[in-house]
Length: 359
Image (tube, rainbow, N blue to C red; front, side):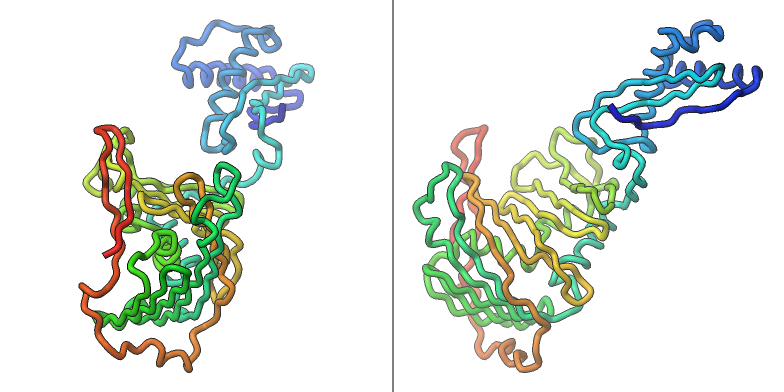
């Protein structure tokens, strides 16, 4: 058991001060539980009745924002130590160390501010530095059953990105069953594809590089704040149908398609993961790139607990010699571009599944 909150302490207080402290503690215990305060005299300071009031005070303070431990399960208790006429009351928590309890509480940051800050820090496409990147995707070592699943051994891919800004970039995808060169110059798109199906697991990595936070516009409207600190992890999630009351800016969603979340880590904060109905990608192994902290490892979690790992093996500022690669030389009609859409297939009124289709 480790101590959590120091309630009061004194050494050789006067009788008047002792009586004031006594009255305050009894009134405070009564107020926080909204129960009548019993008549008590000095002898109760070391008796079982006073111990029960210390339990009440300890419980209340351990739940307050000024004395809170972010552990999932905590047991509360109370200790009292007598030193003559002085008393030291300590609200105690089980499961939290002194280091955790006495560390400065994290700053609370508004949800939209935290998300905007995290994007500027850890999203390449939200930074000011044009870049050239190569991401190597390797298949999972094993499936959820412990054995390599059919088709997983073919999940090798290389994704190369030349990025100037959001309307000028080039993507090159190389894999066994599908390859693509896509050059975007505003409304002009040049695209060359090999293979008729754009695998979802590849597109998840492309989407995570370009937009690490899915449904960003919705998440920016979620009200509230989160703790931000070097050891804190917090998430912003769209409100579900059984969540708090909806507002015009933050409606509640009952359908699976509209649910999304983003989780953070570290002081800046950085984006730890992004999730919606189509993908879940986690970010790790952060390293500096200019003024940003960029994850070098991306993990794409697929159905049946299949984990596909992507590793950024090359990241550098875009060279002047690469600029000609960003110029589209022809125009590909939208009907000739390959697109992937998720189609809802309902098996029953209570269960829905999503299937990836390329056109």
